[in-house]
Length: 478
Image 1 (cartoon, rainbow, N blue to C red):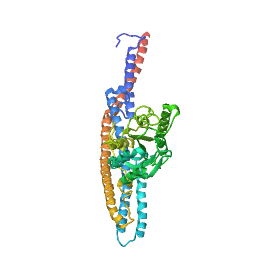
Image 2 (spheres, one colour):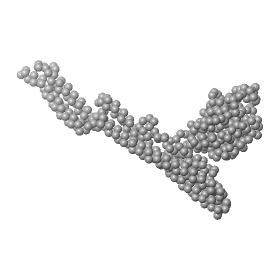
Image 3 (cartoon, rainbow, N blue to C red):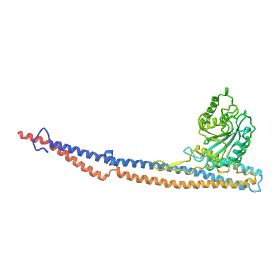
Image 4 (cartoon, rainbow, N blue to C red):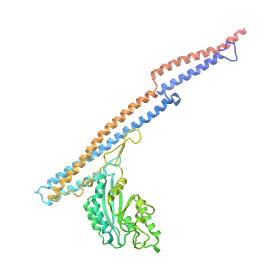
């Protein structure tokens, strides 16, 4: 503080002004905290506290969303359980009808009337399997595959066909073990004609084997595999939700019988590449099982099965669609093929129930509930007294499968209830922690605000007094 009389510089006023400015800043911060409710309104207020607070906010919002996700998961599971209750009721009714039909007082004409209802009930189970949805997302049939074996029917194919017939049970069992809702069809090709379907698509192993047997080896010498691939696109009616899988079984090159000008290898490649593009565009994955990899001794000895059915290079059809090539039907082929199909069908439902990456629960809803998956598609019949008796075992097995699935669903629903509680508890606890760091202590802040108000008023009063000091000096002039 200056100890001289001066009119050019009023040191007292400058000091009072500086203090007033500081006090106004303190008062402004108190106003900001009181009006926002936050102690930290900008990073400068508390750098470390702001960093911790933002991390906690990330977790809080994550757990809040996870709780909503879990509630959605519970609703999803409850929808599935409701549908399975209907299937349970249908199976109980079918069993009742079979018990009725097994009674000797009924004629086969009477039983045919009973069979009409059973047929309708079987169709209803399949309808529930394909139409049960949550938010336009199917619940049961997302692991579906329509698999077509395109079988060469020429004279050299007896061995490969026999191998497929023998391997059919293993192949089907591999699909079942992976909970794939499968249908399998058979198409024959060879000779000058078009590829044709043998029977309908089925889930029954014996029917599958019979269809392969029916292909036979009596077709003409031309095996136009590329043509067969293309024609198979329109041979069967495929399920909308199912992945289309084509498996060609042959011992010849891709389009045997096609004679390009001057044995133009490029023309063969063009046929294969065009077919690969077509089937890939129709979301088909093609596999091939060939009789060997030796060069074809027929019309073009520069060609081989490997040139067209390989997984490496162009135009390889399996490579172009994501499939695989097998040389013959050997041990382990069924498991490898089923594993490839398993990777192609849609995965099961996963619920994200945590605040962070990969905090998920895989739903138990991994199993289809179609008549084929339940083992009653072609085994339940009330047409005769003996078939009615035999059907009871199949229906009991189906009831047990549905019961096990519903038990798993109930357990999952209970688990999700605890998961929901966990998310809510964590959200609340973290919110309390974040509040202690970031929120203002309103009581302490009001005290600070009141103190700042008094100091600002005092500073302004003293600034006014300091501004009067030069006038006191002028009074010395008289």
